[in-house]
Image (cartoon, rainbow, N blue to C red; front, top):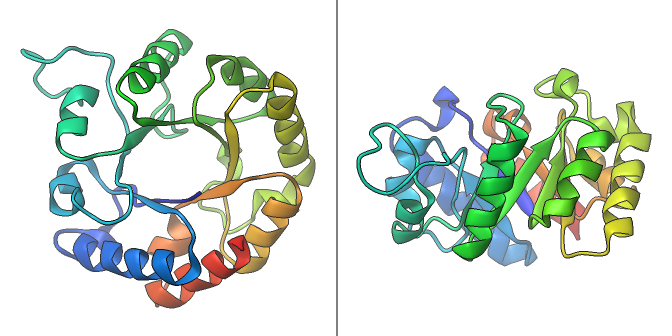
Length: 218
């Protein structure tokens, strides 16, 4: 799994997100790599019918109906959204809410990606059996310094913690990934995919950098 979090970067504002997703579709097909795009919430409607999975950046533990301003999983599913990030380092939530949201997405047959900052959180949240756990040390996010190089032992320990639980959860590696070499190293250390943001979004040529990452995945 190759997940691209667009955050709220200006580079994909407005209809630029459509161009971005179309490039991702072509790269995904060419290299037979599963790519998922995580656009800003207000742009989801422009790309929700994409050929590749579209995920939400955040969801709320709230009900369908009179819940103004909240992002409701049931309604996302009706808009063809395939799942969501949960507990990203820029939008942390309580462990109680994480548990409820993982359960809700499982019930809806949607993809859950729980973001964690360290191995202790991997061990804690793998017991919830989310589809993916993405480990991202906050200090390396957006730094250009890849966790696979700066703290390789973190990926190895996280992979072992997930393996020990013996469930379906898979490990994604994030934070500071800017090259295919970073991707290859993360895979060698036990990650089954990556969660990347600025390393892709802020690149001068989206097709070239996505292709570099995708080739490194396989």
